[in-house]
Length: 347
Image (cartoon, rainbow, N blue to C red):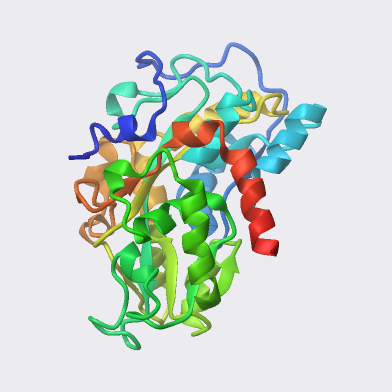
């Protein structure tokens, strides 16, 4: 059984030693600037309200927030030495791939209170929160029994007719295709890529929109341009709080993952970036950020600061039907697999 304690093993990333002391920089940060690359929509708004604004107020460092994280741009910046970004908000597969390719700065010792973290920091990454990807729908239009709950349901257009969304990226999309084709969560990796593409080819006529920008996984449901959508629990949580259309989200089966923060190799504001990472992992800001945008904190102490209604939206890490993204598998396969996926989409 998977739980919060052994989720890291499923993610497949090696850890570094315990670092408990608060971070103290040994060099003066020459600038009062920082560039954060994160995700759009209510996620970005939550990052700004729950984390970025308190950070700017406390430190006096001005943060420029950009979206959306793009590994091709990371590679181009690092390889050319023209680095323009500082902090990168990375799903585990991106974080692991960047680590394998040397795109991230080594994190200084003493940056975090490791005893407070449910998942330990890595040499070049710190886990920021855990998330659940699953199936969303409009319960007013599709009541119980009329909407898919599992990935097998989602890829069964005959039993559950309707317009679907899928992402324009291989990571997560290949996993849910295989789960939809009957692969057991425990047997998901190594991914059978050829089999996944066959499943996607079959469902392709029923996909109304291949989504690049994550907010669209929600807005397409709200505008009734899609009937069912693969999205994330935290996105639906924030949308239901802020918007008039109340959407449903199935926790019957999810694809769970870890989001990380990293500092680009050669970042122009490296010291400020380290300060931001340290700030982001403090319990009070883990709580305020997750309250604002959703997701499960990595800080243990943050849980007692969350509202009861927020706890209902946290990933169900002990659900035996759930699968867990293996970031280590993606670390050496992300670039080639994404290239193949983009070519397939154009075909």
